[in-house]
Length: 129
Image 1 (tube, helix red, strand yellow):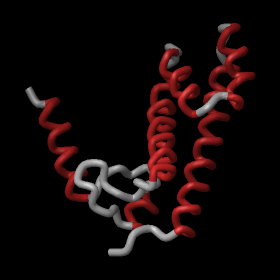
Image 2 (spheres, rainbow, N blue to C red; image 1 turned 90 degrees about the vertical axis):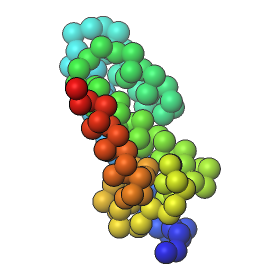
Image 3 (cartoon, rainbow, N blue to C red; image 1 turned 135 degrees about the vertical axis):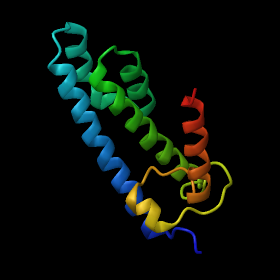
Image 4 (tube, helix red, strand yellow; image 1 turned 180 degrees about the horizontal axis):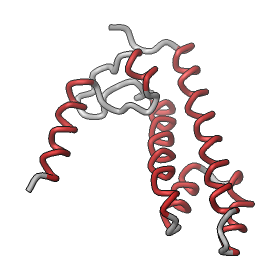
């Protein structure tokens, strides 16, 4: 298996940034629709926030519709950081290369198929009584 070439990496990065922009707009819309004055103020500053600040803000707000979006922002931010560090496309558990096909399905994928199965099994077992 060959690792991601520069063209593919740029494509994934562009896809991640595009998804992040959409999420910023979604968060802004949610904050603007809130009756809380502080939320409306935060919405006007949203585009100026770093990814880290955006995660911090959405994590602190007690708005149920933001929980899923916060998790998506975290995943995208982690993937963008991996690109910067040269770690994108490698499994976070075993460091094996993640297939291009798997990354094309989900650009925020963090694990290879084998480690993902182990992770899901462990996660499932934690919820068993």
